[in-house]
Image 1 (cartoon, rainbow, N blue to C red):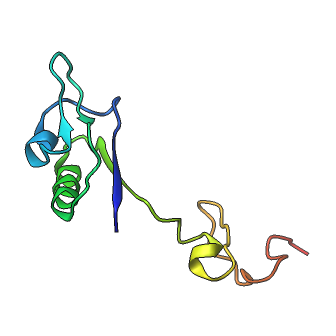
Image 2 (spheres, rainbow, N blue to C red):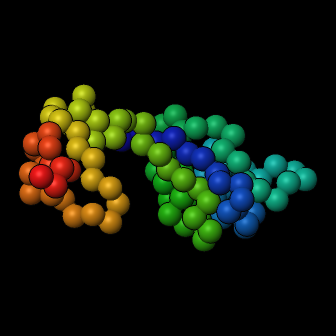
Length: 103
């Protein structure tokens, strides 16, 4: 699955591990102390290197986003998307329209 990579600047420590793992795509520009994605991966080798760099990032600042739609998207899942607020268990009647009503 193709990914799009992004550096969260506020979290990056500038350690350089990412640019060591994926030098074709990531760097710390001269005069800066934060990594940047200067080129998104174009080959499977570059993709693997960027994923490895993301996994090795000690600050968790290199994020790998999938390019596909969320599995909760009805167009992708083939069914109806459901929403359950964080911290709530899945209601028994999740398929019904009135599962939230306490009637």
